[in-house]
Image (cartoon, rainbow, N blue to C red):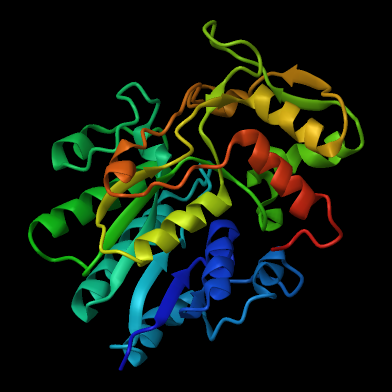
Length: 332
């Protein structure tokens, strides 16, 4: 039997649903989704409503479903995770982000299926050790994430590398260290939405938006730097990986750090208004863990053969606003 079935875990979420949208549009695969919708009117349902998926699986029945489809699944694209950096239940984070990921790794290794999974730039901690995506064990073990979310992702990256070195691995495996992602289908995320989505309603109205002040003398207010990546670039990299046998850990950002002020100004321009920005104190609860600079080093992915250009901040924000946030139907 030809394997043309791809399972996307977390496929109703922000990044997962964009991957589902791209794969369904490509038309080369049957797409099954594992996720929770929570409520009938949740944005997660609407994230999927335009796409002809072939199955929807509750997380608690995932491995029963996999057992029933042994020999049919070509790849698992594992986006399911507890992704909040402020989640207080560390046991839940570890179970979801580490234990479940190990189980999927072992299932894929046993069924000759491929595994592409979401790691995170949160594994780099405060960035003092840089943002090189070296995937040798010594480099991975040196990283010091700042929160339980980043630690859980780092644990699995280490597990994946160890298992690959001892020859127990899926036929293809790729861990992608996502940086600051923005784009359509993030309405359900509430306070975890991208800054673009959070400030757009006020920018559209021509009102003042607020950004965090800097509490670091090396950075001006609003000058804190992040590597912002448009979600459709992530979708493109995953489609590229599914078309060729590339394995390893890879950064996935734009490769260029930009300021939150740049991001806000681009949002105002896309909304047709002059920027109006005020600054407020960073909450004390997150101030000690706040990152002032992230920038993905993209050389490893380039050396692996990925040559497409990444979307500029201005182009990505303009596309997001014009195609989604500024429309009557903002879902992809």
